[in-house]
Image 1 (cartoon, rainbow, N blue to C red):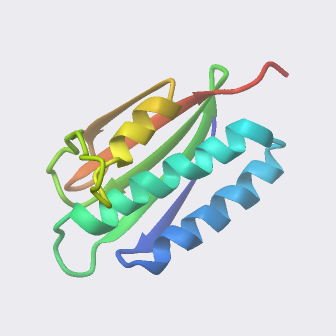
Image 2: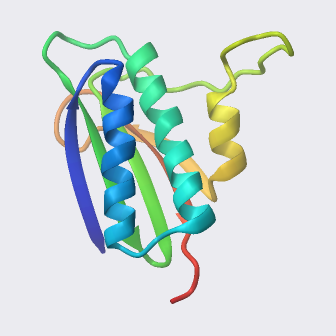
Image 3: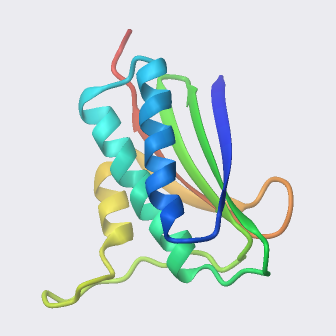
Amino acid sequence: MTEVRWRLPHGPRSAGRARALLRTQLTEWKIDGEVADNAELLLSELMGNAIRHARRPPGREIGVRLAQYDGRLRVEVADANSGRPVPRTAEADDEQGRGLAIVTALALRWGCCPRRHGIGKATWAELLLPPP
């Protein structure tokens, strides 16, 4: 397994910073095309949920983890809130509420688990990598 981790402030600028870090890492790993585009979209949705919905103690950061293993790419976002994400059905005129539907549509699988080290949770999504 190969992985990288980043810790970012809990704020609106962190989503863009996370996407930039992801693009740089995927280039280094020679992952491009549809997988790279989908990974960026998944990260955007998971970061958006963590920034908008995760109530957290002051000073807590958002953890981002990107891992390659067994022909898969995992995008993971951890926050200090233990509330699990709940998919919902957005109405046609709703401006929000489609994030987890997008994650479900793009990811091979996704889920949520307790944060490895500390309080909160990690929400993750996986994509299949093309054969080498």
